Length: 209
Image (tube, rainbow, N blue to C red; front, side, top):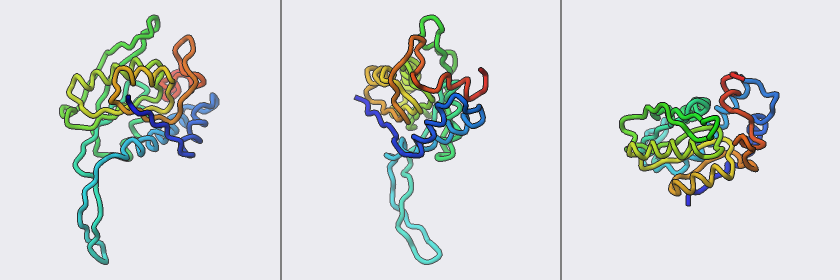
């Protein structure tokens, strides 16, 4: 079963608390999403392989390590996932960015796919899907399906807040996909929003509500 990693670093927990506050404005909310994404990405990339090289310092030759040839792709789920891209690319500026467009049908709550554009070499990259909220898990599972259909062999899912229902959905459909998150909340309300959550992350990132 896919492993769930809850990042309990004090800075992550502090910033998630600020994110939850209904009085947090759009500018600060957007900055917090980016900052939290960077911290979680730090943990999600902990298993990148290293190789030893020699580098000349001003004083001597040092045997040191660099990342060994693994290529990354970050794939935000539109639109809220865009809020996490700046943070993750600060850590890995050479990563390619794909996009998957999904929206929740207001009646059925099912995930509807309307757009995708992925790097041509996605099969050769470690893909990390980013979306601030993992609620029902429908969008996450759909995005993972799309990546795997395009040949991706290594996929992780990164979010800021998740629900038990969303985690269970990924673990049932894709037990090989590890999940990285800043917090696990109590569950979903009747409208399938995470409680206590942050409200609609997309609206709060882009100031559309």
